[in-house]
Length: 276
Image (tube, rainbow, N blue to C red; front, side, top):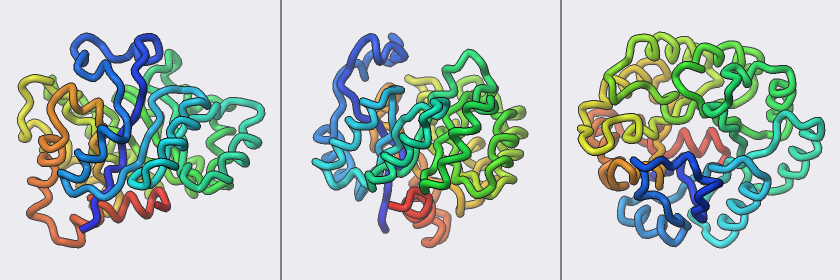
């Protein structure tokens, strides 16, 4: 079975650029590069990955593309470009000449204006992505889920994927409002969901695999196995464990699924969504 990690990051640590790494995550305040990830993927029988932006600069996108040129296990890049720029189409046209760039992401979770994704300048950028065959990763917090049905319904031909289950309140055991909102998003068939980033939403030091099952069940019932994909969120996940522990959460759960369902979740959906 081909396994693709649909969500991980690389960076050269900078205390200003990466100020979002708080004291509770101090273990990841260092460089993380492909030579660090390669043996981990091999050890866990993962054949490739998608590198996702962690900084909102054009230099970040160039950095990830350069790494992919040097390491063939990086099968795709989700970069950043200013979707609100008046020159957005020119940027997308340029990036469309770089085959490894599969899509883009904006760190909506950090925006003071919680409905930034519905502002006219942002919508204009989103409206151009499909023209250049780009996907869009939706990085939000739970409170922003209510804006997503309107966003994705405006662009039914655009491929969207929710990162990290939209970060439900796993540590506090909160599920009801998130469940209602994620189910509404899942009604739109152009939206996928990454089962990723869960351990950092839990109690970092004391989580158990059972903590995640109710949330995974909601996502699987809402999206089906045809629109979900595995992601580690390495190296962020290292704040709450190691890569093997993270992938074990979903591998244990999916043992009861059919071989085809396992292949969809662990590889095929990511390959199809990102055109790897």
